[in-house]
Image (tube, rainbow, N blue to C red; front, side, top):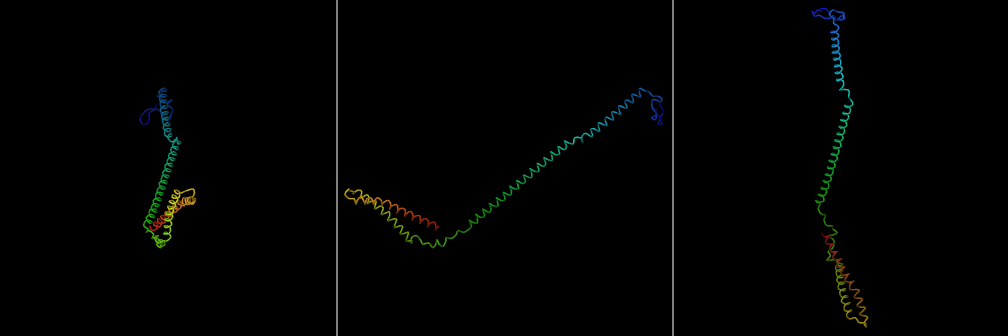
Length: 208
């Protein structure tokens, strides 16, 4: 053991302590072992710290999977948003088109309502009234004659049936003719009256 420059005593670091005065093998070995233990513990702690510091960056795969999932979710949200916007735009365009068509139809209806009614045609004004039409008067006369003749033949057939005898064949012939003509004449007369009423109705509609 030698004296240092600062007044403390100890081994000279330049030489082996085993060959210096004051060396004790047992205490020195314990000191060396404790020193080596401290050194090994410090080294292990340093290695553990280095491993712990390096470990968070090691699992890169989960981070990549999370990023890919987030990107897919973002793309899906963007696609849904774009589709919803397109559908809304299409619906708005259809509503606008329907509104325009409705306005056009209402405008056309208003224009038709505002148009003045067409004046009666000149040809309708030139038509003579039915009262001055000789054919109408002739049809009325024919209808009345048919009805009267049919009624007369019906009475004649009835009288001939009441006065019929087997010795007078003329009565039988007259009865047969009267029975055949009576319903025919009355039918023609009634049909003629119906036709005249239809003509009057059509002419009245034309005047309106």
